[in-house]
Length: 275
Image (cartoon, rainbow, N blue to C red):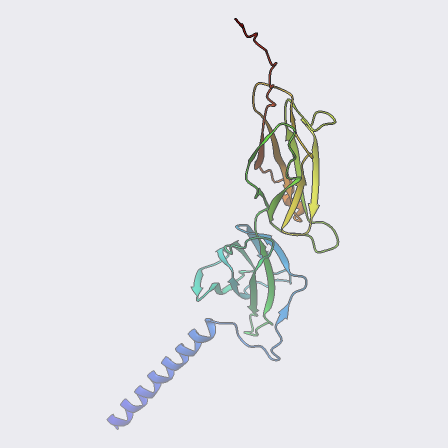
């Protein structure tokens, strides 16, 4: 009888351990509803790199329902006890955790986003799991406009390169219109282009690609004969397809130093004395 009791005790302990292990395992991942039909939201969301975004389940929340959140490409910073599972930031099933905050940590470059995911599932008070809801998030780089051409020096009246190239980062439009816009201004005191002064002229160039060109005058004339003058292209504004981020300023410049035209000077003849 004693052996029998010990055997039963061991079995009971094993059952408890297995049950506990199963409980921990199931709480460490999404549960599988029947039928299993995860929902992928349309459309995707677009966010800026390094942005902080709050996500909320909009379905009716019945008190006591438990929510599990998984995020890839970002870190959950509010909404429950946060753990890391591989590449995922996780809030495990927590009562009434229907809202989280995510700091997006992906580092995209150029005009191509990196993609993260926000996933959520809830369990009712009757322990019935919902379908897993997935939201794909496109993370775009910050808008920048950088002139790639090196500064140059020319003689007064010489031809310019005709244009300069500006490399862009950020979010272009969806293809229906130009998503990038760069504004510029010429700062060129005492310089003309053959038809008149160019100082203060402005313009705006748009594109959907990762670069654009800004036009230069055909030639530049230094109207001060004794000193170098500079023709500077100032980038004054850069915008991309995020309506709430328009107006990002840039201070990148391109400089052409225009050397003055030298005066040859009069030729003076000297008489030769002959004997």
